[in-house]
Amino acid sequence: MIASVTVVGASLAGLGTARALRDQGFDGRVTVVGSEVHRPYDRPPLSKEFLAGTMARDELDLLSPEDEPLGVDWRLARTAVRLDPGGRSVWLDDGEPIASDAVVIATGSRARRLPGPPLAGVHTLRTVDDATALRAELVPGARLVLVGAGFIGAEIASTAAGLGVEVTVTEALATPLAGPLGVELGRVCAGLHGDHGVRLVAGVGVAELVGERRVSAVRLADGRELPADVVVVGIGARPCVDWLAGSGLALAPDGGVATDARCATAVPGVLAVGDCAAAHRDWAGGPLRLEHWTNALTQPNTAAATLLGRDDPLPPDHEAPYFWSDQYGHRLQFAGHRRDGDLVEVVEGDVDAREFLAVYRRGDQPVAVLGMNQPRQFTRWRRRLAARATTTATV
Ligand SMILES: Cc1cc2nc3c(=O)[nH]c(=O)nc-3n(C[C@H](O)[C@H](O)[C@H](O)COP(=O)(O)OP(=O)(O)OC[C@H]3O[C@@H](n4cnc5c(N)ncnc54)[C@H](O)[C@@H]3O)c2cc1C
Image (cartoon, rainbow, N blue to C red; front, side, top):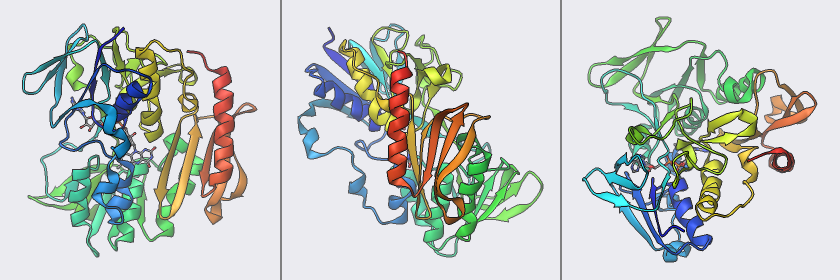
């Protein structure tokens, strides 16, 4: 029996953990520690509607009036700096220890940066403060260079182009998004940039950012210089796990906190959820970190059940993960897990019309699905993949 839980990280997965504990009947003390000064807010709109100026700040808030009875002790603008090896005490940056029966790590991830001195005009996008600062510089006619054509980079490019900004996207890989989507469909999705007048420079890395105090250009590895008034570095994120050094917790090869399928680490009473957690997944053959909103939403239910000794089934997206991305007015949706060698077939629509559904197969088994502007068909396939995965997954 546990009487107190400390959740570290006050965002989607941290709030979700507090909610799930209460929903599952836990009436003990719940303390939520968060580095940011803000109460939990939603990140996906930061590269989309909020950046475009069509969504107000208060619409990002994740806490609603229904959360009133949560009875959480919020410790905001406080950073956890250490976890005792036994996992019973979390130490905050002001020296305060919080002792509890269980700790849930929900510290998410932070944007990776390029090496070099800081220059004005260079941004990353992870927080609402980042989005507000970037938005102020996206004025019509400004020249924006995006370093990295991943999903967040592509969304920022799309939003900035809609604001009248002159956008160039650079990508070290020959085909953007080839990792998650494969070369064939990565190429199709990257084609959206060209459709909307955004220049894509792929297959060449960035050597350095040029400028004295403010950035003036991006120098590519082949010597070319792309003039820039604003630069966004979108080269991925790293899990926020530095504070766990010395805790005895194992990290997975991808840097996430290694857990079993039920979010439990090897230290009794210490669990991890969301972007910072690498949960065991059968299809991955080990622990794997996912930076997907839906994963951060559903894992906390599993973590709370584990803490309270319940044996609830794993959420469907544990074995068939899901994410979406909105770019240039198109909705991309992906579910399942793809790897090199899978065969992909367009089963509905037409890639040239930017409206299609593609299924990835390993042998004769469907393993993943990608939809562009095909929400209904996609939802059917997503359910099918999840149902199949649930019947085959082990814990
Ligand atoms: C711009 C943007 C757009 C996105 N769009 C999509 C999308 O379209 N689709 C999709 O599926 N996913 C999207 N995502 C991903 C999704 O938002 C994340 O998967 C989700 O936010 C993860 O939630 P989390 O709670 O695990 O981590 P986070 O949201 O990263 O929150 C972790 C919190 O912990 C805090 N913290 C870190 N270290 C400490 C510490 N030591 N002590 C105390 N607090 C700490 C951080 O400050 C942060 O507030 C997007 C993400 C971003 C940034």
